[in-house]
Amino acid sequence: MVNSAEQLRASLDALAVIEPGFAAALSRAGYPEPRMREPGYETLLRTIVGQQVSVAAAAAVWRRLEAELGEGCAPQALLARDYDALRACGLSRQKQGYARSLAELVLSGELDLHALPADDEEAIAQLIRIKGVGRWSAEIYLLFAEGRPDVWPAGDLAVQIEIGRILGLSERPGEKATRALAEPWRPHRGAAAIMAWHHYNIEVL
Image (tube, rainbow, N blue to C red; front, side, top):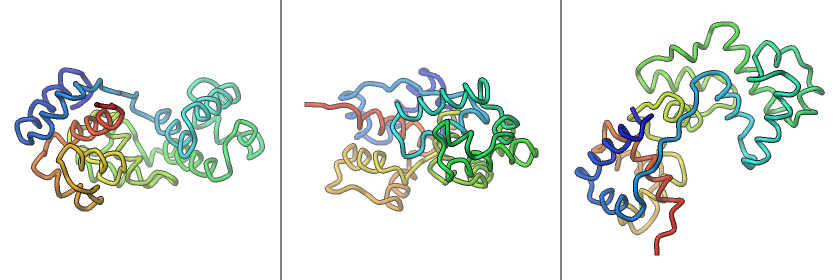
């Protein structure tokens, strides 16, 4: 698990032994802090609201949604509102479709976010049934809401850039190469992703 500072440090220390590039990255940037979110419907709905907009814009839309729907934006309340009510909160037609898909799957019991399969690939397959939730969003959810230790978002651009830098590669590896490079890092690939994002945000002279 990567949902505590102690667990994250232990995984990164293990990575530093396997791959010297991580040892050098840790000496440059230090250990990242864990970034955990509550598992469940609200976190996934926030993910949908935040797609392709700034953090500030997403926060503003979320405040309006909670004012309209109540704290947590319960699925029953969301489904009871019409297009215009949700549009007034800042949700586009497309995002309304995604949000309704999530709410319907949760209310019907078809998707139990508190009992996802233990196998990461099976859990991803469950999550991508939600409209608007692709593999990347599913991986981010499993990593930050459930603290799964070996989730590897190889399609993430920042991860690709930083893994290239950490390993001293001449160019950014693509998704397939990034996935292959990380095979020796099992079962610590989640920590490797967190370190990549942390390293990406650090300006080192």
